[in-house]
Image (cartoon, rainbow, N blue to C red; front, side, top):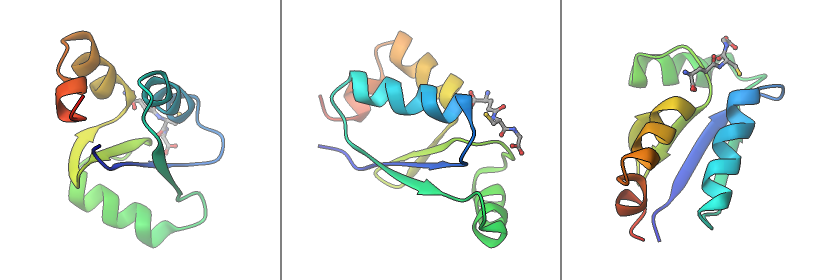
Length: 84
Ligand SMILES: N[C@@H](CCC(=O)N[C@@H](CS)C(=O)NCC(=O)O)C(=O)O
């Protein structure tokens, strides 16, 4: 099973939707709350080029936010990335 990490903030509807999406696929995700961690947020911006949360990684590879993950899911590509 692939390792999924979701960087999120405390009050974040898109983060909640991302967690629900992976949960619906039976995947346990590692949640990293960066609400009070500006250094980690800055590192994420540098790594992903995106300023929003969630930022989702599958086996260390950035796949973007919820809408990106959902688009992969709709195209049937997310399950493959998850090794399902
Ligand atoms: N298209 C993005 C939208 C994400 C988004 O707008 N997230 C909000 C929080 S729910 C955000 O990061 N707002 C800017 C901020 O908190 O700095 C996605 O689907 O992940």
